[in-house]
Image (cartoon, rainbow, N blue to C red; front, side, top):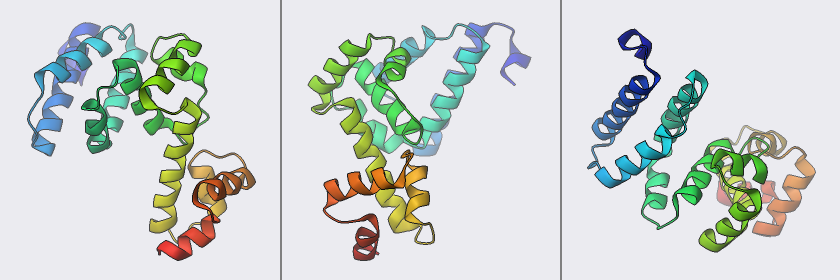
Length: 185
């Protein structure tokens, strides 16, 4: 519907951005932080170069709406914009293969610089953070979807092989996913 109102990519972005911001305000009933809105607007405005980048922005903004409460924690945490955007990206794409190079390209930084910045600001490496997000989501699925096999859950949260998932899970929680599920459910 955006391009029925205008043929300008910039105007379409502004309309989409405002509609999403207002929708977040109306649905969540939270105050609009003008500084955060301005920073977010400027960040994304610089990255809108064509129709596909606009489409990616809208898709990402709508997906992040469902992560709003988690993202609010990070918005107030003092992370730099690049790390904040990295965290959002990881939370939205944890179930896929994500490399440091892809993440660095997403936030327009050199991979080695992003790696050191991530470690400095978050306190753990990118891979450790990704693993934590995957395991947290696995725990959620183990609790809420008792009909799903552990192997299916491992695939849903981004592990290619169930055996590696079992190994990582056991290292973190000291028990197998099945034992953890039986303990928590």
